[in-house]
Length: 358
Length: 282
Image 1: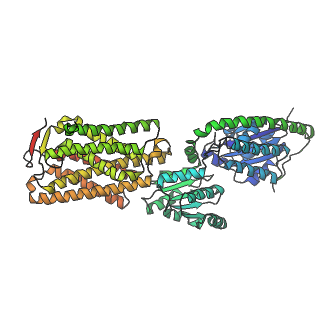
Image 2: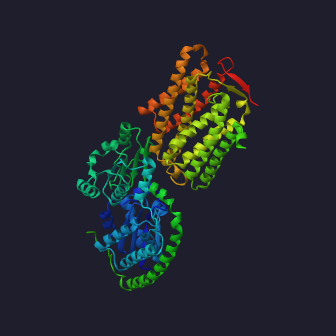
Image 3: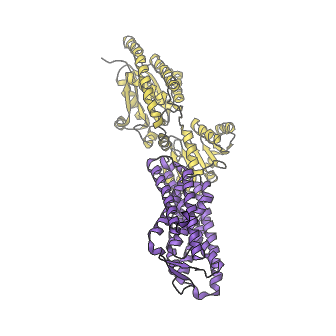
């Protein structure tokens, strides 16, 4: 007999390299939600899509719901299901809840204990709520995940000395330029991560910042907050020659800086090193630019690897966190089982609970 | 008791101190531990003082700057490089620079002390009482010391470049200065070395122009080749044609060429080539 179940299915940085994550990045979430709304046995769904993971937290009337979500997602991404199954995570029941606890706490992050993921999980949950696709089970699981994440961050040292991608980027820049006085920085994209990195540079003494965005109003807003100038997005490649650091975090579907353009810029300033920090997913900078003389290109995976070097200090705390989270997941799972049992009694003839996207 | 020590014994003590810095630094590097810049600096400073005393005794005995044989030239080159490190090294913010300086100091002093043939013949009054020639020789060898420090900076540059391109920034790579600072240091050291060598050649040329018969062609060719190489590297760097790793490799090659040219300089001091007296080492 089919059982209603809580599941999570997806792909994360643990098993999926950057090049594949680019192919798995959700470019049209509205269309994906539309597609998922047609999965008949799916009662609830929340999508967590970040640079390092795409995860679907769902509640299905039977075990096939997860497979249907996977099929719909792979069809949308034009990704072979058999290939996806080799790299995916697929958890159900208590393990799925525990996984969300660990994700929200930063224990599953590339940068162990980082804080940004907590906000991203909250956004994913808020989006699911706004679209009415989070029901009784997901509401409880996510609320408990937030409580658990706050609990471990408050009661353990997992966040002590936490490195963020932004701080790693600034440290990296000091390895190339020494003092950041007089270093000229161009920020491409106005997303949270790009703006956060620009703020980190500003706090470490960089004074000459400029922002460019495909949406000029966004660039103007972010630039005003940073006390920076703006640059028309179309002039970005021409402006590289004047910059020492370019921080890229656009949501453009393809690269916005070509190797040829960077090469041309370097010919105008060959003796000065150029640091390209590509935090976008998919990537903003052509990978072959890394081979150019005096060009240093770092993407998200590279920054995470650098941050790994401070991981050991927090690894012991991580084990303590996992024990705390497991206790809370057990407690939650007892309550969720009751709701799933109620769903089994009441929901045999229930249709899909997730309404079409607004 | 100290007064009874010979010049070579002082120099052995200096070499031992440089080697202590080398070994202590190597242990720290291998263990991935902390390299103390202060320890490095003061160990090298102590070695430098002892070497200064040793070279002073030798200079007093030879009646001038001690550059009369291969041993003395190597010792003076090491002393020159370390002089520059002690003056400007504190600004490098790099204990690794101290480590590599101790490597260079240890290598040049210990190797030259370990080859008795290099110090078998001690020449005295090799400059014939001509202070311009003495200045020429001292400046030339001092410039080679600057090239020695340039070679160390180039090694640090290559290591930093490797760490940035391979994205390994932890461990002892974290002790390296920034790649831009290293590039600036390289350019300045090359400029300083070139200026000193040019001055040395100018002083030498004034003397040679009066007595061209005493000019040893092999020595002249070797020295001019090093100078021309320095000029070429400096100009190519200035116009942006020799950059980054290639510039660092060129600087290393320059120092290797400078060391090789010392052989030609030493050979030029055959009896009869210059009015100098020789003393067989005891």
